[in-house]
Image (cartoon, rainbow, N blue to C red; front, side, top):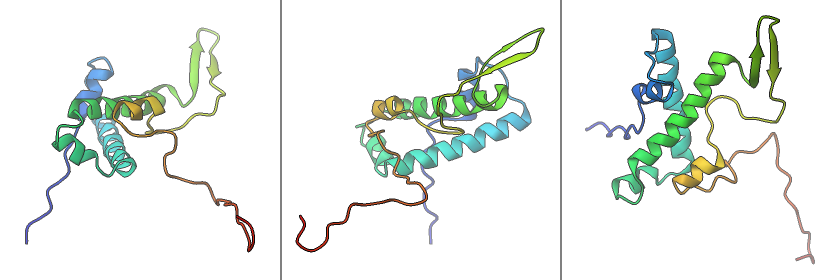
Length: 141
């Protein structure tokens, strides 16, 4: 019995380090980036189950997929480094301004990023605690 072929990797920690300005990642941050990348690859494949097939067939460029993954992981790393939703910090009086707009946290993709690789980003396929669907009883259409 043969083992299944592992799915392609479109972005690496080195790609993320380049996006972060070419800085060398420390051991702890390198592990964190690797974890974020695994999460990003999994989420992207969940959003588009044909992703690897589209890349293999040449319909979609692997570089485009990698760029989307790197941006999502870069955001997550920056949030970890400076604090989630921190907009600015001031010194010496030590003030912090936070972004109060609703925002995602962790690894996520923007609608524009998903559109760049041909995925409809208007919904991520998730729902809240419950969903209410309209119901039409007998005689209603």
